[in-house]
Amino acid sequence: MFILAGFALFVATIIAMEGFAYVMHRWVMHGFGWFLHKSHHRPRLGMWEANDLYALIFAVPSILLFWWGIGLGHGALYAWAGGGIAAYGGIYFGFHDVIVHKRIGHRYVPRSAYMKRIIQAHRLHHVVETREGNVSFGFIYAPKPEDLKAELKRRGNEGVREPVGTFRE
Image (cartoon, rainbow, N blue to C red; front, side, top):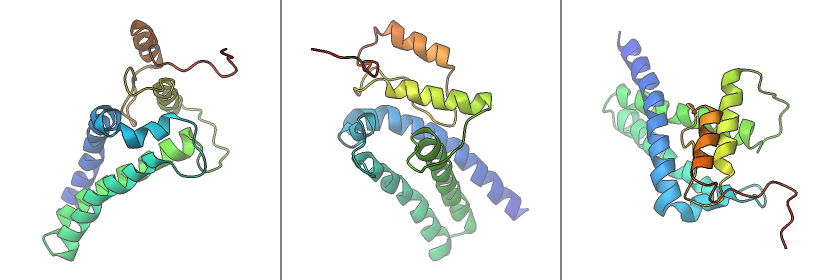
């Protein structure tokens, strides 16, 4: 029974992390934390970008929960929650850094409607180069691309980058 409760906490933590990620992305990364995140909205130079520091920052609660629960002996439920945070980080890394941004080479081609929607929503987020005017801040859940396009249009496409190949004098 205890393992079932731990697993339920693990899954609930993964689900809750999507809400946490949305809030952090929308109001921190596109707010006062833009100084790190703006590197992610620009072409990457090399393997790393300043935005990668967020992975380290967001790993701290997971590490602390494992340490508190197992290292200091306060109970395994803390470790299950820490594991949920770590699992969300792994899912995020796989979807975001590997599949969407192709930071690790692969031959995966999304075929499911869900994966296509996630990728398209994230790409629509990245058409805006500024910290304001973005759409789609979550990652495991994404609004319909048509809704995101309509929202960008409603906002007058402010901050939307020029199409590739466009020449400005």
